[in-house]
Image (tube, rainbow, N blue to C red):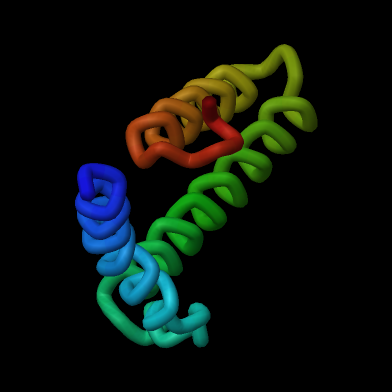
Length: 93
């Protein structure tokens, strides 16, 4: 009798988990049009823009090496790097 009771209790505890797992649906990409997808895309766009600015400022600094313009471009590149870190961009980690 004890064995039967333990088995029934165990089955009753496992059954809701099996039913919930069976009802799960695969990801069909609907999140992309929701707020989560929008935030992810916006973050990606911001990071791409900052990275483009960084590359441009670094190229200007290299092209104008040894001049006051190079120092100005280098400062702008440093600012872009800090901005990328602040936004959590992967390339600035």
